[in-house]
Image (cartoon, rainbow, N blue to C red; front, side, top):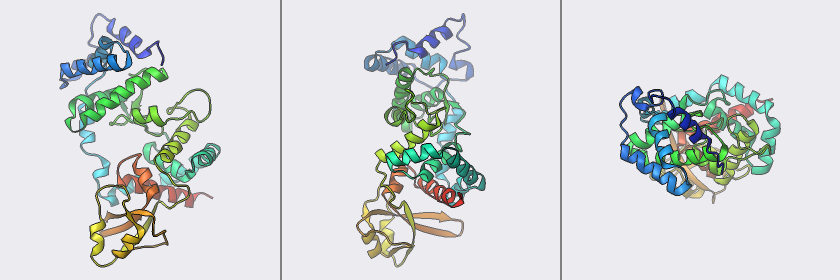
Length: 334
């Protein structure tokens, strides 16, 4: 751990001004965070990680800012859209062409990651394409603002985001980051592959061997980390991800399950009237997925690799967008 604690040093500079107005969240609107909750969090950081509780409190109280638009954004996620609208966001000619360019430019690292982790280049490219348009758009919110806002002003998931704020401050300490600098998504995901703080700490890899795990400016680390993340979460070599299907009768309706994990088998789905459009191992774990179209519904049999993608973002729409973008990039690449 970096004993210099650069983020606390920065905070001391900020607090050294005659007035705190430049650092204070109250200068940007009323702060709904409970002061005692901020103090309790700071004392937890001190007891668990040896940080100075007063300094942490000043950081999250005076430098981090409550941002109401973050609450609005998380309350209206793209994943709430119907599939036919969600798909249009990511399956564009621009994103497909840029994916081909990204693959061509970074083929060496993609092939190295495939050799080490077993994940096809098209899938790694598609995840980075969906997340940040291949690094072009990484989010506009300061990570510390996102996590502070959601951790202390969004009751449905406050515990989770406080935990991520804890992980972020430890990550900043470990990696020598200024915690007030990184920008990311409204949910606090950051870097080219958009890792949340706990995932950054657990799954980011130094893929180019330069002694740093840098998901912001090291393409090799971003690619390697995506491959490692999927491998750790159950990616199975060249096994299929998802297959279109037809349904017959009524028994299949009982297999439209809410959990994303594939708990049925291909054979069980077949007995219920689900017919995949290509042969699959009858014993393979599978899940029936229904996707809303403008003029009807399409059905898919999703498998373990689809589930591995949902570990990156817990949404069937997200995983399907990655799968279809990967296929489109693979087909478009000479």
